View 1 (cartoon, rainbow, N blue to C red):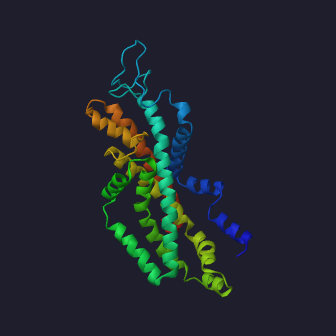
View 2: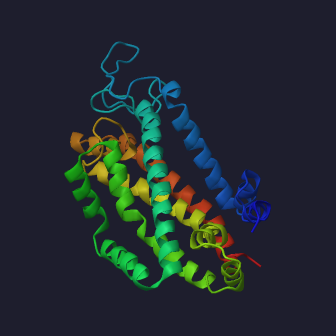
View 3: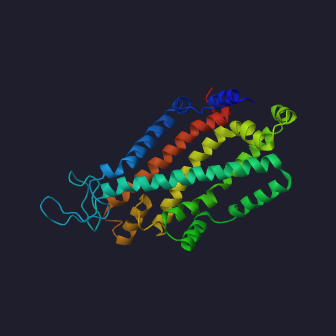
Length: 299
């Protein structure tokens, strides 16, 4: 396959920005989810300029009174914590941390899962046996407890939180890509590529990879969503990075304060953001699921 032919085939699979948007725009919920993700991304990108206060800055109102546990108002749009922290500023700055963890963990895990699935499915035999038994071992481990143990061992730094999520979340995508690779390698164009002297790596990454791309994009969205949920869960249990603020970390601080039943606004703002972002990712993944499985499309 020439470079031009490869480029054309990849463009047909929607690698261009216009093609991606075209796939998403075919579904109204996917399009809504896309724009919500864009909104969160813009908030994360411009967080230092949007947030009016530091996340742990104690505030006073216009009358000079300590602004502790203030309900949402014009002065404090999302309210304040029991220590007078501005929840709007915390939420904006936490968006950057949450998106960084979610996107980094999601994309690294899909790269690992894709490579393991492609190699296991293509070579089969002992290679497949070893890689799939490793995957089975990870499937046998409880998800959240495994993450908590890893963070407890390595530390609560941001990079270790990402590492802990990556080490466990790649397993599903690896199995799905493996199954798809096994089916694709039996096709005639793969036999023709072998007959022309194509190397194994070229067959895997030039001929097979473009055909599993819709599945990769689908599971990339799933992995990002699960990474966000996992980070929020770990942070809520006190295993997040204590030096940075995230949505799960905000809920953890609420629980520590003992004001869960009093400060409803403190609970609502990060919870709604988590639900909105994860749901939006699921909506976008639905569009790619229809590309990967055309039978799901409405007739």
